[in-house]
Image 1: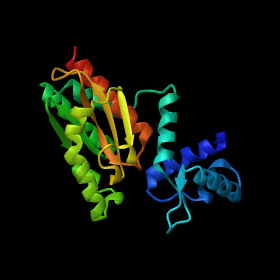
Image 2: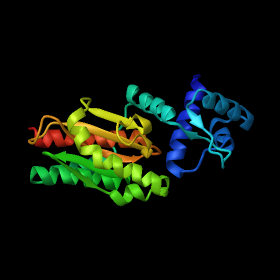
Image 3: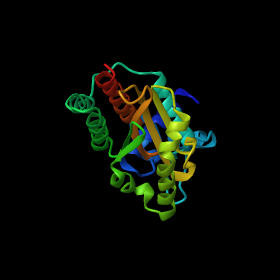
Length: 234
């Protein structure tokens, strides 16, 4: 993949996350100040490489799971200097004033729901706390009953999977078909491991459609994990 193709892929991921409409060449031509023909040629290459696809009913393109994975790897491997966001400050405040450990974790999850518009989740001892289910099923991706069933199956199996698999990285991102449960659900699971009074391996994160603002959500989830650990494992 060339540097320009990588930038075009990033633009498609971020634009599609924002508007939920396949991204066309005319918009990208304005962004990159080149002709639509040039963008179409680059998009064709990206499609052949498996990073984007073209829905049958649209002239635009959407990212594939492979495209999202490449984007997430870029975000993870090249962290840029940045200021703490207002969302991260809100998380710190809500976690700091949580009181009991269980309420502190609930506050972190509820804040993630408000900030990401995804389903929020966390382990509290041997239980899985979830909030924001209506957010998840309100997304345009989940209007088909078959898709809803796949998501429900993923949620039914999420708690035992976390206990059995115990992902060990500080931040874990499972995109679409990468999910070991509910591969056909069209969801991405972003979770942060943290230590708490309940366990050395607790989790907090979000579950949403593969179409989402990964950069911001990853920062928020990781910040939630660090904030919870600083309060609950002091």
